[in-house]
Length: 206
Image (cartoon, rainbow, N blue to C red; front, side, top):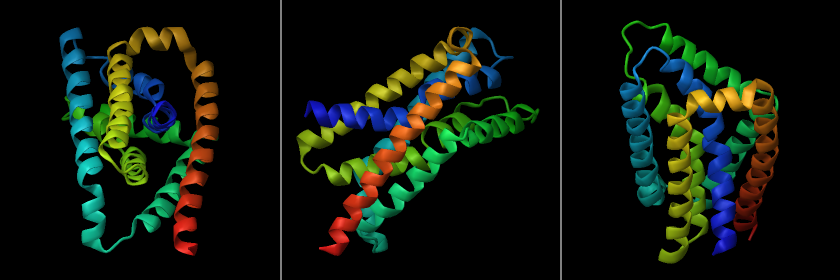
């Protein structure tokens, strides 16, 4: 169970990327008051948690309703996570997030950034949704499912802390250290993505 918790924790940490969300949120909420920043951070994590819990609990039923096998979803999800990993290694993901944040910041009509782009797609994006569905499908049983959900909640709480402390975190880390961390996490995610694909292929081939 400890190994499952640690592996799930790493997966969610890499995909949700709390350190990567912090600078984006800091830039988007620069003009907001401290109270508004805190409220938006809590709302962003709360909404993303609701989205991820829905897909964790009912994602498999949704796949069955669409006639999609778990093996096929594992392969597709693994490929998608691998592409995300490549973007992280080559810093394309960070550039895309910053571009998206800039578009929102330049729109005078948008004031509350908690739902878009923070909750979705930055926290509860395609990668995190695919990850929670893959991990839940690989770990049947109440105990193992609770371990996966526990790891997800841990990372969401860490994300909330990162958003609340976005300003100080940016001053401590700096752009260069953040880039190094992102690349290392990208390599780990690539390995996890390959494992998802291999799991799916093993089911199909047998």
